[in-house]
Length: 274
Ligand code: ATP
Image (cartoon, rainbow, N blue to C red; front, side, top):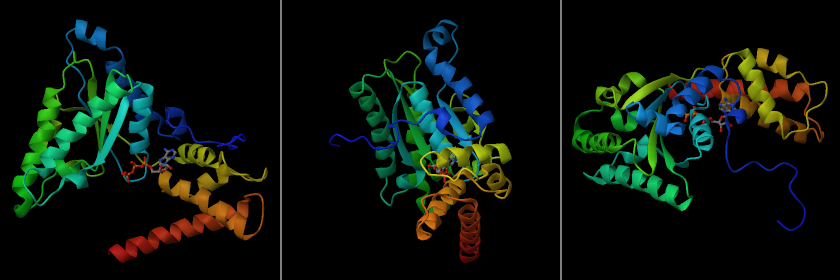
């Protein structure tokens, strides 16, 4: 870090502008976040505070990015966990972890001098999902703790908490989580369309030397059904192919090779999980 600045440094935060496509979920999320931003007006009108937003959709579509951007947009502290971390053999451990997560959110907000915090739980079906026999008791306690935390969220606290959950299997969620006053807003995050794919490709091409002849519109056309995460891989693999060619630019051939590689990888994944 002496003297020379890196050519392009990733910012420590993530904004809605760093998310490609997903215009509809972005708009819906920003609208919901108004509830956090305009807290005084909300309170005056006697509207109950927004406690939870549920993001649903296939993996790799940007749900985590949306949650992070929501934190930046509302100037909130951000803490995150994955639902799978709460499934424990010992009774009470999962519940304790939930309690700690919310505590951490509040103390982080205080430390960072912010008046709100966003708690993000990915794969929330791991907590609020239906599971079989053995782990039932522990899972109930964990879920109950989560419900308790949600019910404890007040509009007039000095630190406002918002829970954002993500799942790709909404049908597995316990109905208790979906009741009014819990996850009040549901936002569907789907695979990107062609325009969205081009936008995502452009974002991930920002730090790469693309040949001026490259057509990302063409790449977008050829990547029907790809998620944002897969498109990020395409751009990265293309740069690796460029390096192998000892080329200092990423050209269309590298991109075509990268599409094939990512597509092939997917197919192999599917076959090994069958
Ligand atoms: P999962 O359900 O697997 O947790 P997710 O929906 O939370 O997936 P993210 O973790 O947000 O997906 O995305 C994974 C990576 O894919 C991101 O770090 C980013 O590089 C890329 N990505 C996904 N969607 C987008 C997008 N809309 N715009 C830009 N990059 C994206």
